[in-house]
Figure 1 (spheres, rainbow, N blue to C red):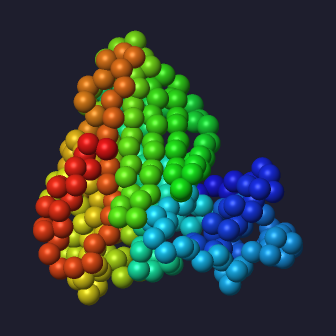
Figure 2: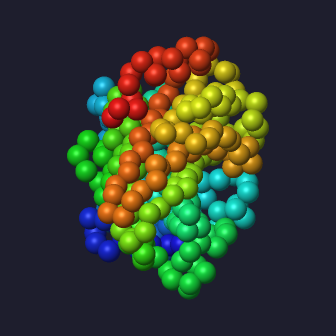
Length: 293
């Protein structure tokens, strides 16, 4: 990931708190994320007095902790050649309720395809509509709102706009992705790839498919003991799959065809489960009506 130096002291403090208090970055990783030298970081950390031991306690009953992913540390273990220079503006971390140091990184969206071709990609791997034309997209950031909400919005050079929203709750993180067709022609084959990377989720990071259950729209992974799970789902679901070398989970949705000026929406879910009957948990989640928002 390319370094992004904070523009203000408020922004600098927020990113340092994010990296030190929650993601437990070392100075070299902070330097890679911010572009500051190690010498400057020693001075800045001293001035701002940010260190692991002065992290504020979280209140009982707080929503699941969701934070923008800072970059500076690749969210995959292997298959790095398939995600060169990952963009941080699509990535956020969801921390496990049982371990404040363990987190999954969600890439929302990792990729969007359409009848036009690969319309968006959140890293460098294969050519997109824009790299083929030599067009470099602007760097963006998640916008932080009340109660841990995150929002982002991007308008592509041809007028296609997509907007993501992430809303943490006590039981789950509910997400949405909207796409508006700002072109003058219909869009079809609007497949979306949304990746949940498990490198930072302690005891879930094994490079295997054996710890995963894929039953659309749900994709789930259990820990080494088989008693804790992370579950993700999106609707309308196109396919569920996993990539062991990353390792990651996917419940990849598809937008309905989109006429000029029209907006289509997808809804997503991410939660944690403690138990051994994951299919009973799928049935419980179905009964919640999360697909309806």
